[in-house]
Image 1 (cartoon, helix red, strand yellow):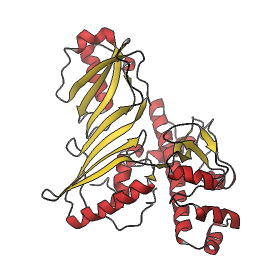
Image 2 (cartoon, helix red, strand yellow; image 1 turned 45 degrees about the horizontal axis):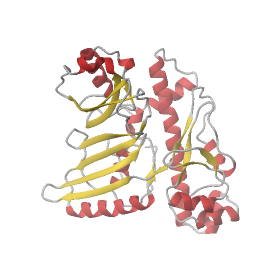
Image 3 (cartoon, rainbow, N blue to C red; image 1 turned 45 degrees about the vertical axis):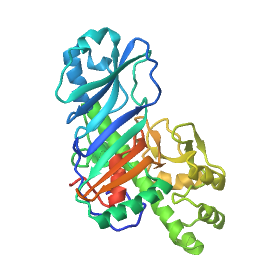
Image 4 (cartoon, helix red, strand yellow; image 1 turned 90 degrees about the vertical axis):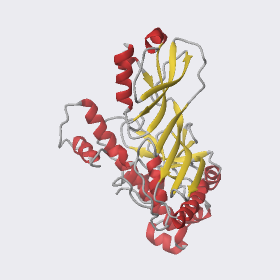
Length: 360
């Protein structure tokens, strides 16, 4: 597992398996739709279908090409999901005849622009955990209090790495020239998994550093990390768990321009206020790298042989409206929360559980 939990509690027992009854996702658009324009905006509810399967069904019945359907993101198959898509308003009459047992159009409006990939603020989640004993419900409640205060690491979840979890290995082999992949989409998928794996390794290292800062003395930290006295002082003065390093690349949260951290104490206060967050590297071309001490740790998880585009991703995120309700008579614990786009609800669940969940 390429992820280090930031919390230190013992594993919590519960049962979770994704299904429409236990996992509900609702997309939150980036902007309000105007109610007028050339594009129909459809709020679609689906279950037990991938987004691609849903788009294909609409395409076949309505007559619109899949490539002409706008969507903001992909949603889970084993779930009940709500997402927005757009099609040209000329298909309005054909749409009235659309019927599918696992797809329902729940709302329709109009907008001047087609929905584009990434045009969403985030997602609201409802998750039901089962076989939760009262003692474990209490543990979950305590963990939620910490996560509400501190946030949690924005790792890529197991879904990113394929059924067997080894897509990143194939991506690494492609980058190193040891493997050829004729299918361009698969090639991009494998390389993206490799980029994500490197990000997770970097973030795990930064979580480890933050744990050391929190748990050891100045002299011990100097020995363990070989940091100058002044840097150690700046790190220990930061109140939040995830420590900011000089020359880290931060971004305004939940979206904004990337900038280099100059004063870690000032920026740590903004981080605690959730005005900014630190970003980590998804290695690739035309992607800004950190400098100074921050770069020393980043460099170990960079691969300059990757010739596809890279990016930077928030290292730390803050769930909103995080609430938990325990239903003792059914031994269920139900969670509601919002996460920014690109973040994984299953990563939050694994942080709570303090163990991997994929095998359940």
